[in-house]
Amino acid sequence: MRVRVSVALGLTAVILLALPACSTDHTEAKPASPSSAGSGKPASVDNDAPLSSAALEARLLDETDLGADYTRKPERPSQHDDVTVLGCPALNELGGDAATGGSLDFPRQAKASFTYTGGSDSEVSEELYSDTDGKLSDGTSRIFDAMTDCPEYQVLVGGTAIDITTQKTAAPQLGDQQWSQLLTFSAGGKESVVKQTAVRSGNVLLIVAGSPALVDRHLDKAHAKATPAH
Image 1 (spheres, helix red, strand yellow):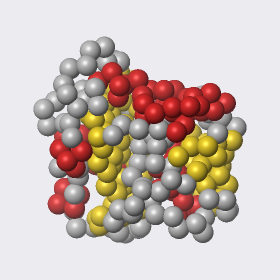
Image 2: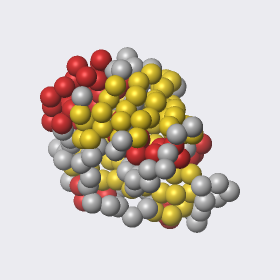
Image 3: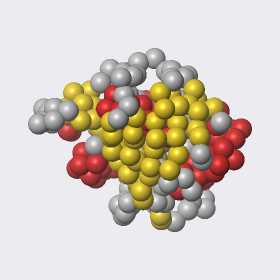
Image 4: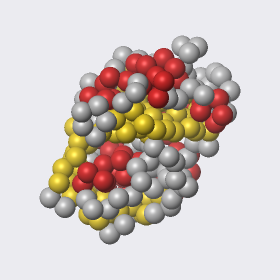
């Protein structure tokens, strides 16, 4: 299966986040999105109209929220490199729309990633999406459910083979739906662990990914700023 890097929630963005630590491929990290351990109640009614990308941008964390040890990474133009997924039938079965954008490519979005230099170089990224409650719930759950079925698989990114293992973690009791997991990336004799946590609150989906300690430290703050009406 060929998956556009700019599309598949959780999978490709977090792979790129981990790549600098895993291999000699220094592709720019993109803000992330997550996988697995879904919990909470599914949306049954589409209530509020989706927010614009500009409105989401204003709700992202910035250096003022994070502190002096954080530097925002410049965004690069969208890339459309392919990622080949091996050993994950559940992801392959999604096919079509899920693999090439479709219902998971929510057009209203904002993203930011930061480097943390407070003692060790780490990264944390945030991504916000907005759509109707039902579309956010259904679209993200399809990817998360598929990845739950794949505790071990491999991806090929730009000629680099990366082995991935996943482990569910307890999801925070925030918003209407939550997902959280740890992903371990192994490539070129190096290993990197990334935590992904996602929270859907009404018509806003928040995804924070990166160093596990940084995700845990900033998730509540990110949720509060992303969903001031909740």
